[in-house]
Amino acid sequence: MKKFMTIMALMVTIVTSAAAMTYNEAREHALFLTDKMAYELGLSSAQLNNVYEINLDFVIGVAIQGERPSICQSRRDADMRFVLSDYQY
Image 1 (cartoon, rainbow, N blue to C red):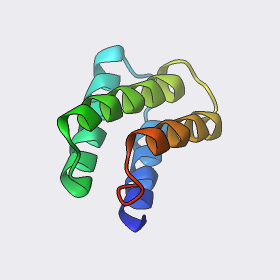
Image 2: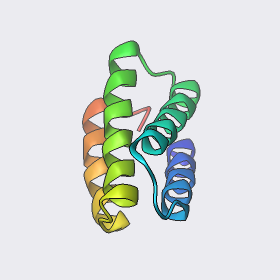
Image 3: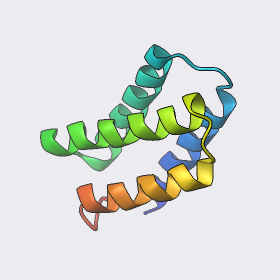
Image 4: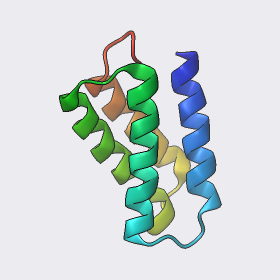
């Protein structure tokens, strides 16, 4: 849980610091976050793909579409709860 919260804090910092981001930059950020989570949480290949899509949706929502981070974060948390095991979450 502590690792997951650290990852979340890192992700929010990265996303909110990016003012105007292109789609390719959003993909790079999502890939970075996914790789970090895969390393720390030991994600399976199916989880890896799902987590990447969730991270990409989050980064695009906040950095490109300008949605409120709290709304995107709650949606992301709900999606992660579905994909990750209780131990990983």
